[in-house]
Image 1 (cartoon, helix red, strand yellow):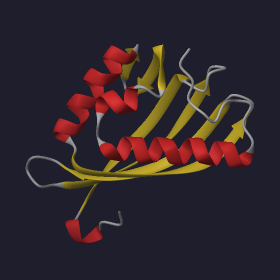
Image 2 (cartoon, helix red, strand yellow; image 1 turned 60 degrees about the horizontal axis):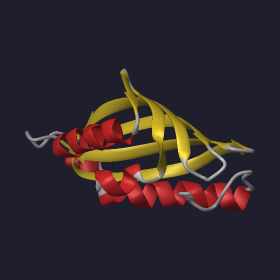
Image 3 (tube, one colour; image 1 turned 180 degrees about the vertical axis):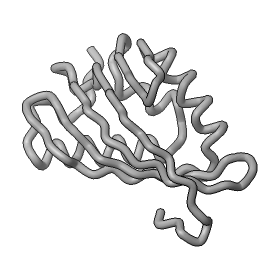
Image 4 (cartoon, one colour; image 1 turned 90 degrees about the vertical axis):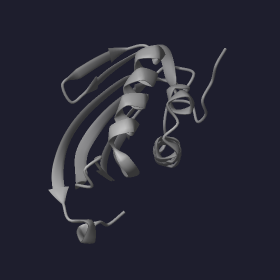
Length: 136
């Protein structure tokens, strides 16, 4: 049985750990590694895209990081309860033309009893920025 500690129900400390683990994993830009934090049948909404299962997550993240170059993410705990965590985040990247962006958003996460994320709903907005305006 796969488990990803810390397990729910979450305390403030364990919710903060889960958020930091997610930030660290996403900053590796390794789709296979990131996908292991999710259930086999995970359900995602990312902007207007709907994904089901780890295979779709790996394909999505592979496409994402081929387009979003020099990606750097920061997540912040917003709220938590039992098996759910809400985060706010921002990340920066540039495209193939060298245009930098800062993306802002919120995610709602739901975990199974083994600490794997079974649902991830993300709302994200992108803002073009100058390279000199980067914060991350």
